[in-house]
Amino acid sequence: MAASMQRLASAGRNLLKRKQSLFRPLVGAQRPLAAAAGPAAQHVLLNVPETKVTTLQNGLRVASEDSGLSTCTVGLWIDAGSRYENERNNGTAHFLEHMAFKGTRKRSQLDLELEIENMGAHLNAYTSREQTVYYAKAFSKDLPRAVEVLADIIQNSTLGEAEIERERGVILREMQEVETNLQEVVFDYLHATAYQTTALGRTILGPTENIKSVFTFLFMVLMTINRADLVEYITTHYLGPRIVLAAAGGVSHNELIDLAKYHFGKLPARYRSDAPELPACSFTGSEIRVRDDKMPLAHVAIAMEAVGWAHPDTIPLMVANTLIGNWDRSFGGGVNLSSKLAQMASQGGLCHSFQSFNTCYTDTGLWGLYMVCEASTLEHMLHLTQLEWTSLCTSVTESEVARAKNLLKTNMLLHLDGSTPICEDIGRQMLCYSRRIPLHELEARIDAIDANTIKDVCTKYIYDKAPAIAAVGQYRSYMWDLNTRVSSGPIEQLPEYERIRRGMYWMRS
Image 1 (cartoon, rainbow, N blue to C red):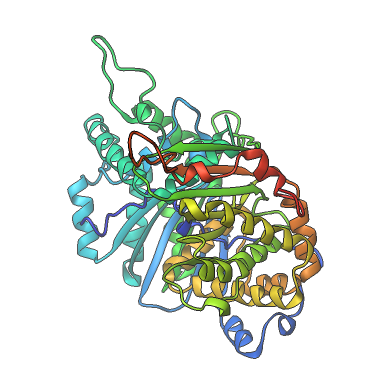
Image 2 (image 1 turned 180 degrees about the horizontal axis):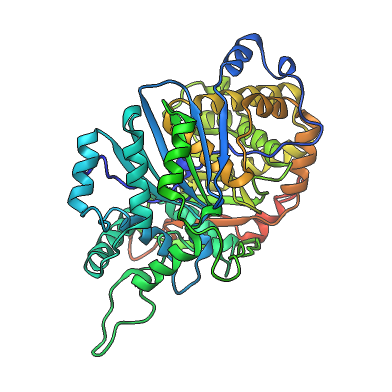
C-alpha cells in the first residue's frame, strides 16, 4: 500500500513538479493553426480530444478529456493552499492532505487501503502554495468507484484526535526528509526572503512548532494545529465554486457529470460569511545566506519578480527561461549545447549544475536561476549568468529565440504524455481560467514571440532590477596548519548583495 498511497509532499516546493502549462490568451496573438505549427504538429493537434466542461448548480466544475484509454485519472483540484494560512495555522492545508487517508465515516484507514489495492488503483495527493489536489489513477471501468472514494475522503474524513496525534510524527519525519533535498530547502529560503512577512514567504509544511504536540504541565501550546483548524479550513475552502473535478483517459463526460451531481451536489455553493480573499504578497529585493558547514558546495538561487499565470508577459518569460536552459555534469554536448550558459559551464567547469526557472502564482512569480557550485567558481558563474541575462535584454538573436520556441513547444507536448499529466493540466487551467487553453492556441502564442518581444519583456523584469537571493552552504572550512586557517567555504565567495545588484545592468560590477 505504501506505493499506491504515497503522498507527494508538495508540488510547489519541488521544482520538478512545477508545471508551466496554464496560459491566458494574448490579444492579437492568435493565428490560424497553419501558421502555428508544421504539418506533423498540425496532425497531432487536430487529433487532440476535446476538453468538455460543465458547471453544476453549486459552482463545482466538471472537466474531462476522453482519449479512449483503458485507464483513467480523475481528481479534485481545490483552489486552496498554504497561501490562505496565517502564522498560527501555517501547515494546515498540508496536514489536512495527510488526514484524508486516515479514514472516513464509511471506511476505516484499512478499508480504504484494501479497496484501492483491490481495484489496482493509485490514490495520491499533494499540496502547493495555492492549490490542494487529490487524485486517483484506475481502470476506466472503475471510474465510479474512484470518484466515490475521492468524494468520501474530502467530505467525510473523521479527523480523529488519535489519528491527528499519530500523523504529527509522520509530518515531522517528512520535514526531516525535505531538509535533505537542498533544492527544496533553497527554494523555501528564496520564497522567505522574496516575499517577506507575507503568505508566499511561509513554507507549505509549516514550522515545526505548528505540528508538534507540545505540552506544558497544564495545557497544550495554542500554536499547535488542532482538529478545529482542520475543520475550519474545510468549511472555509472546500466549496463548490473552488473545486474542479477533472478527468482524463477513458472517461465519459456525461457519466462524470452524473457522478459529480450524485457525490458532490450537496457541497455548499456559498460561504458562511465573506469569501476569503487572496492574500496580497509583495516582492522584496533581498538576500538570505544560511551557514551549513557540512556542505562542501554552494547552493544558490537568484530571482527577480516576474508575473502570474494570467499576465500577457508569461509566455515571453517562459521562452526567455528556455533560452537560459539547464545543465549538469552528466550532459554531453559541449559547444553544441543550445544554451550559451550551458556551453560555458560545460567547457569551463563553472558549476556542478544549474537550472533556470519561471515559477508562477496567481498575481506574481519568480524568474531566475538555481546553481550548485564550488567555492573557486561561484563568483565567475554568477557573473556569467548576469551577463547572459543582460544579453536577453540587449542582444538576443532571432535564431536563438526560434530555437527556444521550438524547444518550449516540444517540452509542452512531451509533458502531456499520459492521463495523469493531462488531468493535472486540465485541473490547473480550470482553476485559473475556467477553461483549458487549446494546444494550437498555445502554439500560436509562442510563435508570435520574436527577439524584440524577448528584449522588451526581459528589460521590464530583469534589467536593473533588485534580485532576491538565497544561498546555503559552508561559510568557512578549516585546514589547520600551525593553528592558521587557510581556506574559505563556498558561500563566503558569493559577492556581497550590493555588488550583485550592480551586476544587474550593463557592464557594471
